[in-house]
Length: 269
Image (cartoon, rainbow, N blue to C red):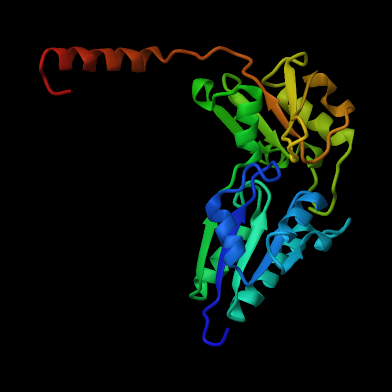
């Protein structure tokens, strides 16, 4: 260890245990001196412990009533303390380590600012699984993604001609960052906002990726008006399919047609 320069790699395990781990992410875990684990459940954590003798769980830092931002800062401090001690540190997170994950980005930023080597290795995210399980091609109609509370707290533009994917709806409206769940009244505010763009009987898909190979993905379909009245854990994602057809931009189409004609005539477009 003497003279060794500390480093940090944040890697993603993917969503489904054992199925999504890439060889490069596995290599970062195996070569690390210490591994920090921010994972989705205890079974996944136990599986990781079989891969490395020094796996330190980050889950115990979560507490009801404690700001998640405080917890995430503690995670950064824990990882950086070991980096500064000259250790090769690997932070292992479920899904993709950079999606809905504050600590990996901040830890890498801090490590690089202090001159340490730091790297993020992508993983298969819930978004990737969602496209596969729901049969959605985001390139067909387009796809908007919002964290649900951000959609409420700020003036965002919703496009009902594309897919709308809302993350962490179970926590919608939580401005304290200290709760694990908000109630139906908060989701009712979300429904009222969405009803400006979608009919109340519009189909909403509730999605949850499988985290174990023996599981099936969770897929439920309800009407938009029912959203406040169903059980909705924070890890479930809400998808609204398009409610309107794409509207042709006739002026742009005419300009492009004119350019096509110029090219056919051998003139520079």
